Image 1 (cartoon, rainbow, N blue to C red):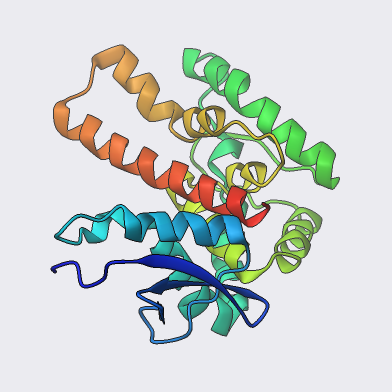
Image 2 (image 1 turned 180 degrees about the horizontal axis):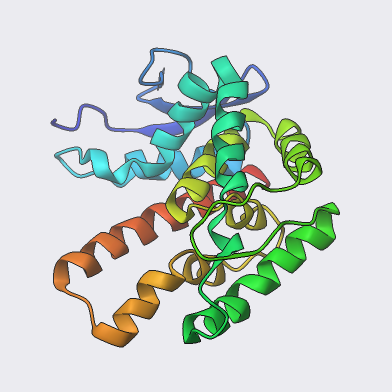
Length: 231
């Protein structure tokens, strides 16, 4: 698609912010008013529009797409998104370990235990750790505690959290990303520990590296999205 606008600006609208193209407010993919809760996020979305060339590249609208997801998908049915997120918590990657005699187990302890410990201390929740791939249900009180946390989050935060949890197969990693001062590289390395471990042992091919780089970009974008919500 050819670029069809010259100027990009931001205006206050209904207690939020609207990105405008030649004074025309943007609507979401679902044709709803695209109202963004913080100026910082609105400026970042505006920068995506400003940074387009003569041909518009849809892949460069990562933040805009998350905004649209929050408005079009999450807002009409927050309970559905919370249920999807709880499913990640109930089978969280950080809780499933290799056999204790395996060298990978020690790497998992080193990278995963600090994150789990931080989460448990912050929220007063204790999660089961399992060696092997056989599912072991989390305690009912832990699931209830995670549900209570999610119920306090607004739709935009849930949208960013859903992307983070999906890419890491871990609700805990996603929730750790919401903590002020969180290190996105630490979280990304924890999320991809096993893939990175295999690459260390056996090497990786170009296709796998390209796929991993793309997922990392999406993860960092979602991390930036939730950070900008707090600005």
